[in-house]
Image 1: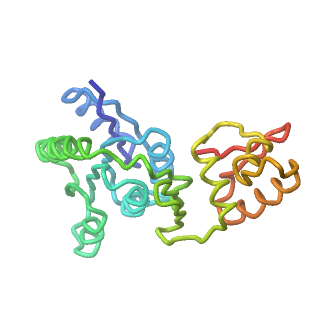
Image 2: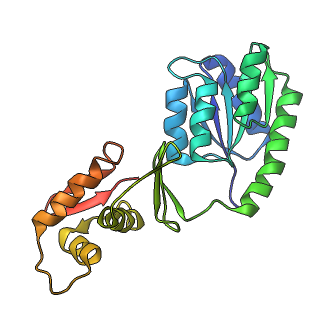
Length: 229
């Protein structure tokens, strides 16, 4: 059975370590830990944890900002907010990000366990509904719906030409794989009588690259290209 992955973001090292020891004594989780929101988001993108436990007040990126960034990527991740504050505006922002619960610090461990148990129960429902496999996330704010042939940035449709969309679909379906200029030419132009032109491929890649987040399309030595996700 697949182990549940939990990410715990807390800038106070002693508190973080103590809670991790407690969680390990109660749950058979894979646990990742982060000292701030930036590190937490990086770990989230790398490991896609099922549950995120995050303090609100952290350096570099606060817990609310982290929750909003996670929600751009997934609606299914279970988020529990930890806060030393009870300001109404902060808690309302937390619920805007569809959190499972919020806990006031110092954390009552019984409430913590109850919140995680709720997350596990609702997680089983989310797993059964399954994430849409037709959606490919190119970056935190950029995604491609390969079923609808639509590309979005910040949930807004970005218009692509027919050849740009064909190239994006090809590279996305072969994500993290080198694709030759010749393969691109054959798939995009779909005209066996047309003479192969590496320059046409380079020009098309350049046009598409301007509409994508930095670093998504990479040039590979020898006339290859790939999308790195």
